Image 1: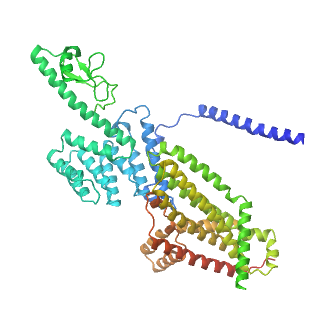
Image 2 (image 1 turned 90 degrees about the vertical axis):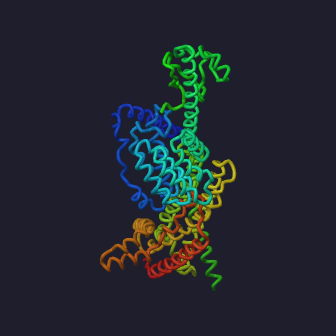
Image 3 (image 1 turned 45 degrees about the vertical axis):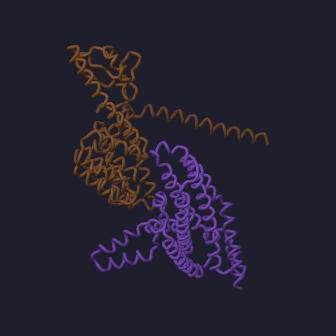
Length: 301
Length: 263
């Protein structure tokens, strides 16, 4: 009886100690392993969407989820040190695998709408033709999803192809259940495509309609950027008035303090006006110009 | 006599179910629950707000996969184990027909699978309740998909039983698994038949398309994850197809098994 207990205890000890040794060894092996090829993460996909769908044996929905999560991880890994960049401005991040990943996810599950949204928002800065192709594929597979028309219209608007954007918004507006602003966007694109008012309308709708947190955050930042552009235009007008009065550009915010107070402009402790994200603007002394602080979350571009 | 046959089949089915429980077949539910619990808690961070879709896809796919493994690996052993342990002599020394024995064994495993899919379906529903923080409209739409999965598993069990009535467990498992794969490629068989140049090949693939079980009809996981339920007519037609197919397979299995010599 006693020997049985000792045997059980010894075996349990072997299991625990053995697992601890294995964990230590894994850490050691990780340290000794040669560094991974940085290009390995960008190797082409082994399977295209159609083949993946064919061999998925009815598990295509799960496979689509896996490719979708892989797309998110892929973007996340590339942005690990650059989290503040809005996701519609990732052209410099070498995301060449993103289009095939989103394409495969949407081929595996053509009704899965979120990858199309990502294709419309993230891809134009990387490969606009792929962005249009994947979003159009989404419209072909889901002709009643008006959100996809809005997203394709957004791509054309970004490309300054206002006629195509207007046409897409017009087609989307015909879909039962499409909101009335789709019809308004159709007219706006033709009459006023390049204006800030149109941009504001697009990003407001995107912020309202999207269920994706990153897309909503991007739209929020773009709306802040539009506010900031208008604020900076107003500041430049104040600089011009000051220059006309004093014969030179202001060298510090203090010189405009009385004007800011009269206009009830929100200021920080040093008297610098705050941008819409609450960070003080930077005055280019003597140049009648104002810049965003690099610490501000408002995108520069 | 007819009532006697019913009770004999019921007794064999009940024993087959008990045996599966004793063999800890239902332990896979523990793994399923752990997987679903983990997914419910962590998948939100990974899926970009798509946790409900992922839970339905993951839960129903696991239901099909675990069920297919049970149908194949337990199904092929249903008859073989009785022969190997020589308990089949004791069974047939009683007034039990070979067909009754096969049908009883088949129903026993079907009951095991029914318990399995019901518990898993409840698990997926609870996971949806958890991630949605209340009622989720996807909950009612997953149950028709669960029914279709169960029908597919019933078909697969019958096929496993058919193969095991004349071959070894390893070969039966391999053949059943191949039917599972080919059954999901039925659309390709049809398009192959259309695109083939020679008449013989066209006939072959058309024949295979109609003869092999069309398991792709039972894949309704992806639409269920989008909140779409199959039409009642579709469910009735696929259920009818499954019952006719199962009847044919069990009849064929009985035919082969009744000629088998156990000496």
